[in-house]
Image 1 (cartoon, rainbow, N blue to C red):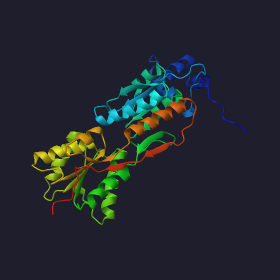
Image 2 (cartoon, rainbow, N blue to C red):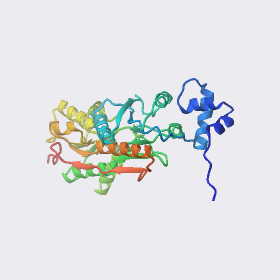
Image 3 (cartoon, rainbow, N blue to C red):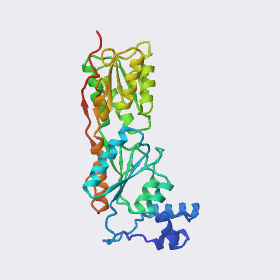
Image 4 (tube, one colour):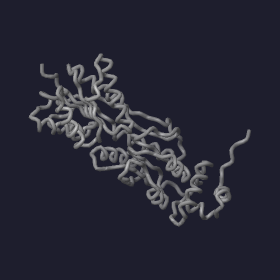
Length: 337
């Protein structure tokens, strides 16, 4: 039985028509390589599935990289807490990077990463291109994605939540209270979690025999201003909803403010459900009914997984969705008769 031989740097160099040191510079993120040459070498590394040999004497670096698209949110802080707890248990520390874009890690970030050692990378709410995936693999870096923005490629470890079930549970709760005209505010259409929450909302309405009305579904960002603006838009309809399911707690807080500005009370005049169960949802007034997304657990699982992969332990599964749970508080009530 024959086995596939592992490609070497020398073979990559010969095929690319460059020197071995040039290939080594690309693998290690050194900047002094012409862009065209770098791209050619990276394509060959990806084509041959090259993985850097790691010295057994190096030992763990004691660092995990946590990479965010954005971090200006209490949601991100919950992710940080979960990652730090798991890293601390393993005797490691967390290095946080903020990309300020949902396009995923770029060349500059990869070059900075290659200039130092890390035990693994956890990428949060971003796209992961095939090029970045290949570059991480070529450097023998364990990586996982938390709450992936798009569909992860086969073989990529991802940790998310049961967003569809959460959307279903939130909408069913409002239906059981007697609401029949329910607004939905969610995030961008190209985000998996956003679309899954809308699909759960749709399924609950259709199961109840109600028509899904496009004017009641709004897409924005998961931030307060989006909830405020879309909340006003929904409440300005000729036949406004008696309840709104917001795709995040921050959006729900924006709906609270929109209702207040219109002289409406929550839940007497409008029921509101959020999604995430941030610490702020318990201290809001009224306390927010919301779908608990286990953010800390998601980050901790991804961190433990990449640390294990860095030690040569294969992940138990490549795709994990942790359960969501409806938490009923005081922001929902039966509609006015």
